[in-house]
View 1: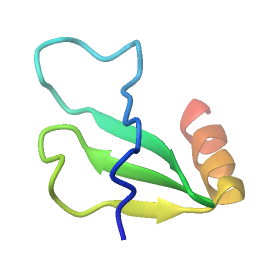
View 2: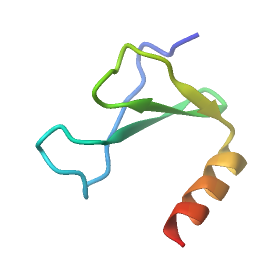
View 3: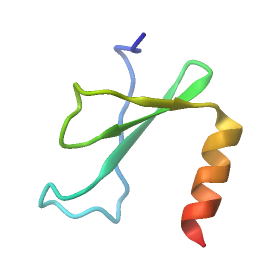
View 4: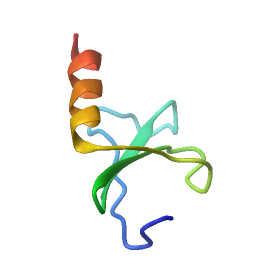
Length: 60
């Protein structure tokens, strides 16, 4: 179920050309991740601990 009041945001490092970007939103109890080019498409929902591991892994 989608939170209609979600504030989706992109990285400040993403370009304005509509390239390969994801957006994230802090939803009730989870973090939502979606494709910025397809905001109405499927979303990945992860808990806060899983999101922290994902970010730490990507920063390596």
